[in-house]
Image 1 (tube, helix red, strand yellow):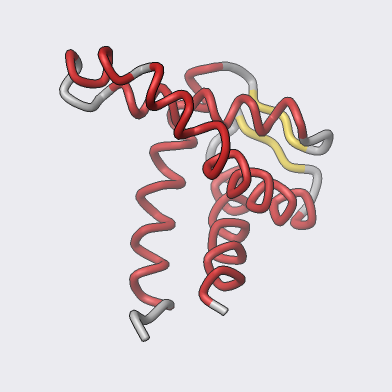
Image 2 (cartoon, rainbow, N blue to C red; image 1 turned 135 degrees about the vertical axis):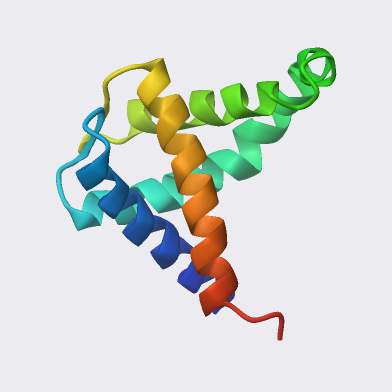
Length: 114
């Protein structure tokens, strides 16, 4: 049940962030739901590989390179989703930071540890 709630929270937050950030666009809320699912799959498969490959840079930059890895994962999601458009790397970077922060806050409110 928590997985479905987290996917819906991610979809809702991502959809509303596209209304605030002019560089990221969704065709509709259904695209945001698809984005949340694709993002979850990419975080399971691609993100660990990128983090392993980028480990030296992550250590040198004291963890800041992990933000770049998150932006790259968003750009990969943009490649797979037809109804989503990201205008460039920096918009993906800003979107990934905002989505991570807001999703963490909202998930802390709506999900429980039970």
